[in-house]
Image (cartoon, rainbow, N blue to C red; front, side, top):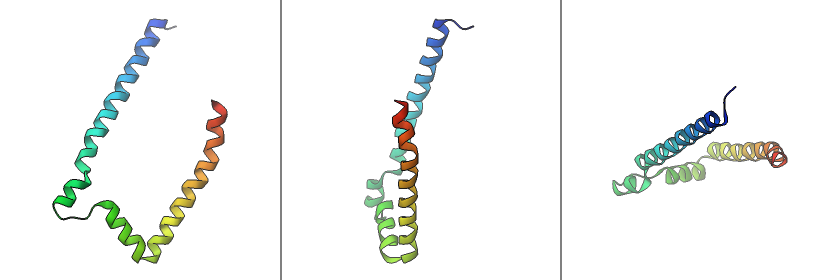
Length: 85
């Protein structure tokens, strides 16, 4: 049976891993920076998505389907999360 000190060390180890993953994701996000794309004259992702949704009816339907699905999943999971706190 592990002692309290072992559990504390394991928990601290997990927190360090979470911190490192978070910092790594933050650093990685700079690689996909939209400002650099605009400086090079390329449209960023939001601009491309907006153009696609506004001009292609199939893309608009897909976006609405995605939004409705996300909303339905939220409705399913939120009561469980609220009940557990």
